[in-house]
Amino acid sequence: MIKPQSAPAIDQDVLLSTARLINQDVEVNWKDQVSSARFSPFWLRDHCHSEESLNRETLQRQVDTFAIAKDIAPAKVEITDAGRTLRVTWANDGSVSVFPAGFLWQISRNEGRERAPRRTLWDRDSMGKNFPSMSHREILHSDAALLRWLSLVEEFGFALTTGASASVADLETLVKRVGYVRQTIFGGMWEFSANMAFKDTAYTSVGIGPHTDGTYSIDSPGFQMFQCLAFDGTGGDSTLVDGFKVAETIRQTDPKAFEVLTEIKVPAHYLGDGVHLRAEHPVISLDHNGDLRQIAYNNYDRAPFRLPVPQMTEFYRSLALFHRMINDPAYEVSMRLLPGTVLFFDNWRTLHGRHAFEGQRHMSGAYLNKEDVESKLRVLRATKPPGARK
Ligand SMILES: [Fe+2]
Image 1 (cartoon, rainbow, N blue to C red):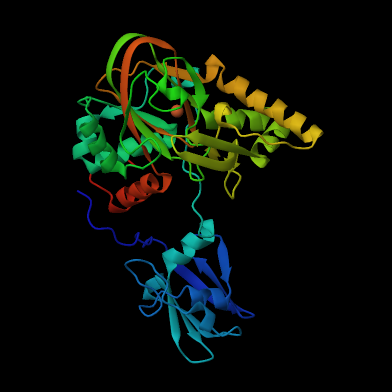
Image 2: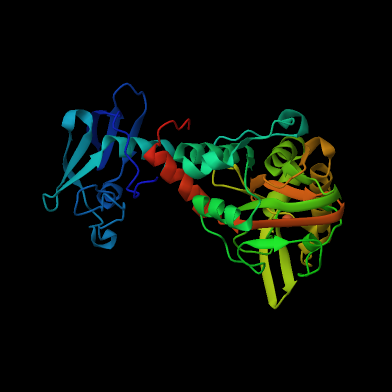
């Protein structure tokens, strides 16, 4: 099982070769690397790795940032520990700050920001019928298997398990293996069949087009896990569309529509069952690098809003393009979820839907928060369970 988490390991293989002062800044070079990096004195003091300045277990800052002298300046810089440590002696009080070479290297590479993970975007042809899938039992009992499964979800936006027992309790065990059951208006672990227990289209037997859940939630559910408990009838296949594939295609083929879909925040609402939720998301959200971050689309739940006529016309054109593409069978995969199969998907990337059906269909599922699943991935990767492939 997973050991108690400690701070992620700093890369020990990276070694410093030179350090010098340029005006008041510190410039360092690494062995076998052509790039250099320059750090300001104030930033360095704020990120000192001494025991007094940083809790090495939790990485919580213990420096009083606001007590650092604005004119703090290094008196001396040196490389120690055979290149593993930078030492800076400060001119104002003679104190010393230390920095692991791997920490400075990592910061110089990504500026302290996580980059989007490696993803494989797919459409119907490239996905084919070999959906990413693993054994339910293996995931429950092996951290390496759990890491592999979550990595599949990260790469493809969804994955299946086979061999589940088709019980709500078993699904809850799997959810808790990954993160927490999110509480929503629909409860924690939910169950539904074709009735109108809630005022929502999911609780009928009609077909449902591709959409993401919780467009009306400020923090839309990051992931959804569901399974079929019982099915006696025809139709009812679950459908998935890679929203990131559609978004990247729009970015390439219709930059104006892409701009509109990433910039116009679309309000959405949920009324009924004693609540009135409301939130705004662009249909396509980007991160600080311009990489895809989130798809938020459910035309049923869009709330009224208005733009000046030219922009509104452009918005409708762009939305229609997005709608047409996600409903194009070329982007859709479908699967009959029979009892014993669990579907886990990224609700910030993968749109889901359902074909119409006749008969009885009994489903259960749960939402998970984005941050909790990402946390589990970081912990599993940091602990490197034996046999982990990623
Ligand atoms: Fe849904």
